[in-house]
Length: 186
Image (cartoon, rainbow, N blue to C red; front, side):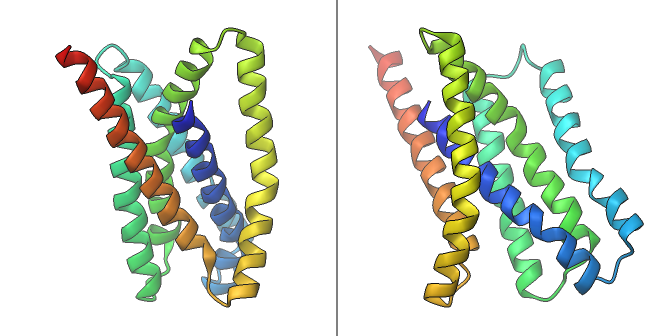
């Protein structure tokens, strides 16, 4: 359940970045609004494709494997995106394709984690409603907090937040794996 909540926070931080893409694409990259509209479909197509592929391979996928794919895939593509952005290579690949790959890597693990958390709750409707409520609250708070901290500190807090959340997911996954291995030995 904790993984799902932290994963939701990571999803919100990614959404916050995605909400900035129109300004990057239209003003910095000088794309037309029609071109931007078509290119902005790439992350949604990737998320849908990832969920369909994970459904197809559901029998062979475990929670651990989907989480590994989500964490390590998203971190790899996030670091590549950060390097490309910091190097000045802001283009269709670095903006749309890497965002799509990050979302595609995370979608199955968040879907699996959400389903598992709701399945473990005693009251299914309360469990899913609670996650949706927390997600809605955080989707309002995260952009506000990052914007205010960026203004106050004079440093862009968004990459720091993304790295901190990714590290917390890695730590949670390691703790989950160690705990799972402990019970398997007994």
